[in-house]
Length: 514
Ligand code: HEM
Image (cartoon, rainbow, N blue to C red):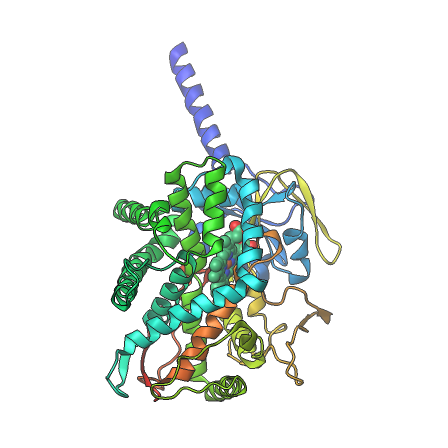
C-alpha cells in the first residue's frame, strides 16, 4: 500500500513537473505585458505564428496593443510593435538584451558551427572586416570584382553569335542564379588558371561557370529546407538531406580549396585567418565558410528578382530608372555597341542614382521581413516611447518584426503598392521623413535590422542590386512572357528570414539589345 502511494506521488510530481516545464503555470504578473499562452502546452501559438507570422502578429496587436508576450515552442517572446519604441530593444546594452545566445543556438543547428567560446572576439572581427572590405575603399574593389563576374555570367548566358534571339527563363531562377554566382565568385574567389596562356584563362572561366552553377543548385535545395531546419521541425528525410548538403558545402568551400583560388576577397580571407590564428580547428573553419556563404548569398538574389519584377510591372518606374542609367553611362563616356568594350561601372557611378536607390529601398520595404530577436539576460524593465513601463523576465526573448511598420498605411500610404519614388524628395534627395501619430520615425524601414547586429553587408548588397539592374537594362531588352500576369504572392513560411521568396516563379524573356 505504502509503495502504491509513493508511485502515485511520484506520478503526480512528474505531471506537475512536466506542466511546469511546458509553461502551464506561467501567469501574467503585475507590470508584465499581456500574455498569450496559446491552447497547446509548450508549443503555445507556434503553429499559427509559423503559418503566417504577419497575420498572427497583426491579430495580437489588434487584441493587446503595442507590446505582448507570446509562448512559442517553449519560449516566451515579448513582441514590441510600436516603431517609436524599437530603440528600447535595438539600443539596449548586451548585458540586458543579448543576441549571441539565441543566434549561437541557431547557427549550431543550421550550420554545425559552434565556436562559441571566443565569440565576442569573432563578432568584433566580423564588424571590423566588414567595415574594411564591404564599405568605403573596400567597396570600390568589391564593385570591380562583382562587375567582372556579373558580366561574365550574364553575357555567357546569351552565348556568342546568337544575334538578337530571345531567351526564356523563370525570372526568380534567373535573377537568383546570376546574383548568387557573381556574389559568390566575388567574395570566395575565382578558379586559378593552370598556365599563363589564353587557353588556360578560358578554361578557368569555364570551371568557374560550372562550379558556381553546381553550388547554386545545391544551395537552393538547402534554401528550401531552411525554414523548417531553423525551427527544428524537419522530418527524418529532410534531416538526412540537410546533413548531406551541409557536408557537401563544408567540402566545396573548404579552407584548403579556398587557398588554391585567386581573387579571394579580404572579407573572407581575413576572417578565416583570424580564426586560424586563434587555433580554431580547420574543420570548424570550413563550417564557418558555409555560414559566410549563407549570410552573403541568401538574400541578395531574391531581392534582385523583386526589384527587376517591380520595374517590369511598372512602366513609369522602368522608364525613370532606364533614363537615369542611360544618362550615367553617357556622362561617363560609355556606350553599349556591337564589338565595343564591356561597361565599366564604377562605385562612383553607382553613387549618382537617386531614382534607382529609391526603387531599391521600396523593393526592400515590400519584400524584406527579418525577425530581430534578443535573449533577456536579467530581469529588466522596458520603457515604451509613451512612458509606459513593462517588466520582462530573465530567460525570455524580446522581438521586433519591422515588416508590420513596412506595411503600416499610416507610415507608408497605400503600403502594398510599389511606388518607385516613395523614398525620393521633390529635389531628388533621399526621403527620410516618415511619420506615425504625428511624430517623425527613426525606424520606418528596417530591411537590414538595426543596432549592433545590423547587416554588415548592406552597402555591398545595395551595390550588387544596382549593378544587376544597371547591366540588365543596358545589355538586354526584357519583357514578361505574359505582361498581364499578376505579381506572385510572398511565400508565407519564410516570414522572419530576411528577403522573402515568391510563392511561384514568373516567366520572362530577354535578348541582347545590340
Ligand atoms: C538584400 C540583401 C541582404 C539583406 C536584406 C540582408 C539582411 C540582413 C539582416 C536582416 C541581418 C540580421 C540583422 C539583425 O539580426 O539585426 C543580416 C545579417 C548579416 N548579413 Fe546581411 N543582408 C543582405 C545581404 C548581405 C550580404 C551581401 C552580406 C555579405 C557580403 C551580408 C552579411 C551579413 C552578415 C555577416 C550578417 C550577420 C551579422 C551578425 O551576426 O552580426 N548580408 N543581414
